[in-house]
Image (cartoon, rainbow, N blue to C red; front, side, top):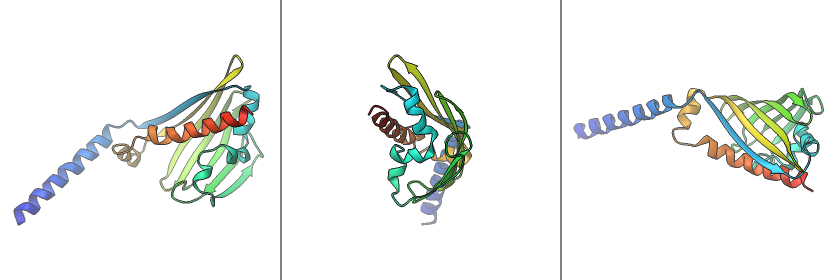
Length: 178
């Protein structure tokens, strides 16, 4: 009986060691990026992103918790506008602050997550005119702390977050093309 327990303990220790080594091979940073072409001028898309009050209409995270508590502070929109949320396990809690805007082509946001895991990232929206359309790119990037790298052994963050970005971009497309 002792031999069986010892064998199981060794196998378990090896499995844990493998997972930890795999986590250490993951990059120290991450980036998730998605893009869409919208048949509307950037001037029509820009205010939908530059004003956090507008996010309720298109952000994929707004529908994951209808009872989410939202607070707005700082500037009404644009640089120094702040949006904080506190919700269920699907959205957690966090805070966004617009750090920079270049009308109508770029918005840079400081994105801090507090729950369920702490994270400090940057989100950027870039709008480039292409004929009668605008190419909109949404990217989030930041450091990958060890816990994040450990999760990435089991979960593909690009697929998980990228799906949400695709939904948000499709929602922006519908709003801007009205």
